[in-house]
Amino acid sequence: MEITQKEVEHVAKLARLDIGEDEKGTFARQLSAVLTYMDQLKEVETAGVEPTTTVLPAVNVFRDDVVRPSLPREQALANAPEQSEGFFSVPRILEDR
Amino acid sequence: MPYEVVIGLEVHAQLLTASKLFCGCSTAFGAAANTQTCPVCLGMPGVLPVINGKAVEFAIRTGLALNCTVAPMNRFARKNYFYPDLPKGYQISQYELPICEHGWLEIGHNGTPKRVRIRRAHLEEDAGKNLHQGIAGASHVDLNRAGTPLLEIVTEPDMRTPDEAIAYLKMLRDILVYLEVCDGNMEEGSLRCEPNLSLRPVGSPTLGTKVELKNINSFKYAKAAMEYEIKRQTKVLDEGGTLVQETRLWNPEKKETAPMRSKEEAHDYRYFPDPDLVPLHISKEWIEQIRGTLRELLDARKNRLKEQFGLSDYSVDVLASDKKFLEYFEKCAAEDKSGLSKIEVGKELANCITIEFRGLARKMNSRAGFEQSNTPLPLRHPDSSEYGEIWQGTLIPAKNLMELVAMKLRGEISGPIYKAVLEEMFFSRGKTASEIIEAKGLTQVSDEGSLEKFIDEVIAKNPQQVEQYRGGKEAVYGFFVGQVMKASGGKANPAKVNELLKRKLTQ
Image (cartoon, rainbow over all chains, first blue to last red; front, side):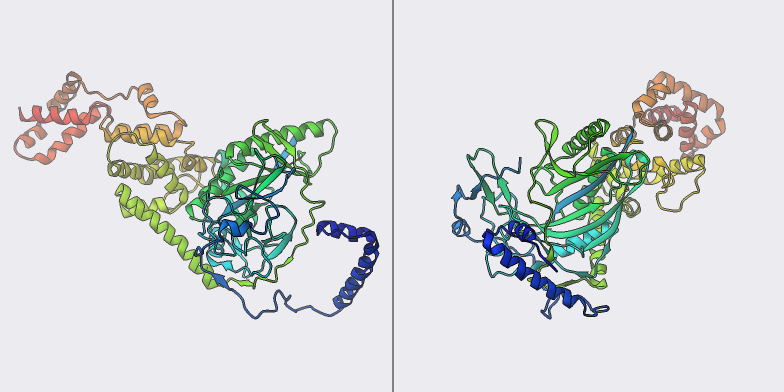
């Protein structure tokens, strides 16, 4: 399956990746190779095979509905590039009202 | 051109768990910003989510009440997008395998029962909260809400008017509150609704371009936003324009909707199974156990009725056999301003609803040519329009019924008049007891002169019984009361009759 440079740009934008002009061709080639391999895998007969959702043997791992202590606010905010009055401060979001 | 309105609703209900969906942080509302977070809900690298069993139970409980099929196999998916209130860069949700599917709710809007199909209900985590007001050049993010369990309940596009959509929404909220899975508070955002609305020419089989409405935090706004949208879309179409599929925000100050600027370049969420969570298998046994808790909830409610109103087992069973009955009873009881004891009021009210109504319903059914049903409280055939009206209180508003019951309890009307007025209320639609009493001249007769006249007549006409009574056969007394009431057309004040009759008979 062929991935175009345009599709690379689209995916990079969705993933918030800043990639250089010169890298786009490389990524397009590499992604195409990965997807071509996927196409090859598709040829395997899988009718009647349950899709694998996990490689772990476990199912139904639950947590009891019990409140545990949260982090102190200072720690929660410690990695934030900007903070103000106990909030994470981010560039103004225009989309909302 | 006449258009048909097509509405579907997406509702996000915050589940009433104590802790978040995938970590142990508290879900309490109103805490200081960013004091209820941990490495899991902050999206720190290397952490692992573990699902809250209670949230799963609540989802199943709701699914059962909404007539859904509960999926035996569940898995969680990552919905990928970037937004400041979403620390992980993805929301854990369910995609191709929702926990509940193919349900329905029957709304009785305007008395006509209508089934609204529920496409799916799935579990997902909430995002944080963004604040913009009064902050210059920045937005603030509070992640206390991030990771709170939500059940997203999506209908098929089955509603045709904003009123129908509101009727569905109200019913859904009542059910969620009744199930004790959500507090139903729209203002605080524990219940959020997003209507999808489109128009199509009447008779057209295909759906028009839909618009999703957001920022609605009350029933009032929901209705206003939908009504505005119908007008706006009608205008665009009438002028030959085309509609764009978009999300629009309701602006309560301007009372209009405006397009929300696109969050994402495209709705390309790149869903894929979350490898951090193990699959969730829901056994038949577990479903049955939860069905049992639904019954426990009902039992708790029955016990409360018995304690509060001293109701008999019979009344409680009948009332609790359908949520609609119970709610109507509670609505009526809430209107009580008589000052009488709750037990007195409750008993009379329950008798009225479970016994008197039944007789009247039979009359209604046979008048309309419906078969008699054997359900404990048939009250009109479920296919008829009045069936819904009774229980929604549009046939006899709760306030009106309570007024009548209080009149009886205070002895202002006799038993026969009570029954006559009740019947009139049933068939007259919306008239109050006072109006009926006034119009029919049923006002109670209390003045001694008039009552004595009735009593004297009865005594004169029945010398044999008078003889018996005076001879010590007190059982005949009831006969005299009955005769006097009959002579007065049921209007005589029973207490006064009692007083005068005793005096006259022993003279």
